[in-house]
Image (cartoon, rainbow, N blue to C red):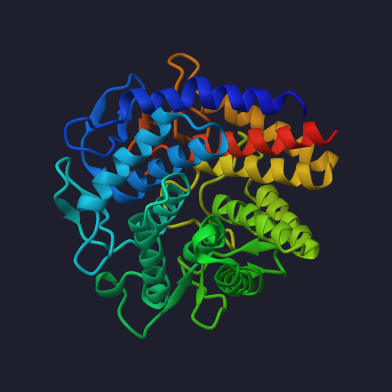
Length: 389
């Protein structure tokens, strides 16, 4: 495993980061373009708040964890200025999208705009400690906690009182978001928030009998036999497990780390496509046809988050199983998602057979986040393993 740290470091610094530096900056109106083809052509100028915020976080984190590169700090501040000026409604809720100029397009129905805005301004405060960045991060985080019971608020399409479901995504995000924001939230707040969501994930969404993690459960934390209730998203569950491993290591709760490792493997083994390789996007808990027609696609973030989880597992226990699975997923991911012809950022969407479905490098759902974050996490994780030897 010794050589992998350098491979991931080189890809991050020589290919992926330069791609976003070259093609994503809107010098005229501020913020970033995310809809970019494999040739670096911007094909849509709408700006999606959670992707804007993710890119701010990414460049602030590079500045903090790799080196104090002034260009990276400037890039983060460029996005922050745009979000600060245009990103929120009068109630402090973050819109889903704006046009190129910064005028609202889609209402703030999606709480993940808020989650990544909080993460972005918290990271920015670490490299540029202005009171306004801390205030934005803290007020947004509190707004997230206030909306936990009904995150979509008045934009919720569900008929009230019929089939109320809890979704896995917000508890998962809160595990990582709270830890990311610990420097400004304080350890007590992080402990309080994360303990509640860990309990929810490990005792309600995780089904011990099957070993699988549901995407939706009832308000009482029970299985609901419906399309939504049977939904599995292996990549989501695997990503959550490396968040929980981080929290377990922070708290010296090694039983929790072992449990997260076990659950991670259960999702990976269940979600692996034995015929074509790679990890399915969606599955049905009972093996029925999923409602998502894209269920058998192979997505970039699913495989990269799995590699992060496996790298952290290997760093934790040096197990041959972690090493073998890491190499297997690495070979699939680097063979299929990496753009060997053009270089730069990676492709995001493959069909089941592993062929590229869309030639985009970024879009409405894919931006400067999962690829560079995973490359950074894996590089730093495996580098420590080598240093400790």
